[in-house]
Amino acid sequence: MLDEATAPTPPLNAQSQTGYPSRPSKQNPPRNEIIGGYVLDNATCVAWGSRIVNEPLDPEVLNDSVAACYVIMEKVEGKPYYGYFTMFGPESYKQYIVVTQRSRFRGWVGMDPALIPKFEEGEREAIARQLLEAEAFEGVTQYEFRTVLY
Image (cartoon, rainbow, N blue to C red; front, side, top):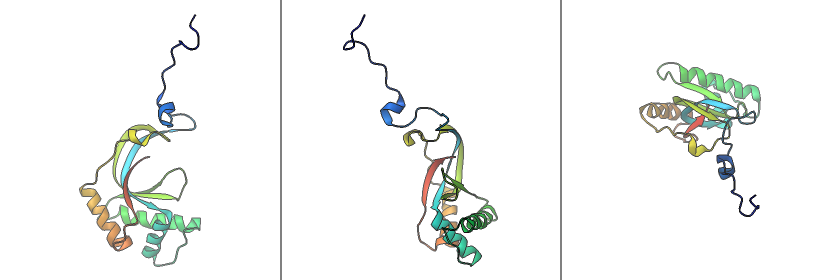
């Protein structure tokens, strides 16, 4: 019989090495896609929606956030952009993304971000950037390009 000092130690799993969960679970549900595009926070989204409808909207009022989201969807998903606009993340109406790329991916909530493939900006992002600058922010860069689980 081996004493505790000479007993082999069990291998470390990915979670214990990195602090991230190593597989999907109830607490870390699966995500089957990654999407890439320009991420906006709620205040920026509501400011953009307010400009489109030409009415003051308040980011602290849920109905105003919903209204802003829907008017931006109509703008982004129509001619000439044919893009996609959606919210994402653990809380509704807190983060939004103008989607320019998407791909199937077997991931899960809370996984190590280093394991998630990253999209690179290209031609579609140039078109989306033109939309953001012309329609929403008039040159103000309150958005960033990211790849996220969806």
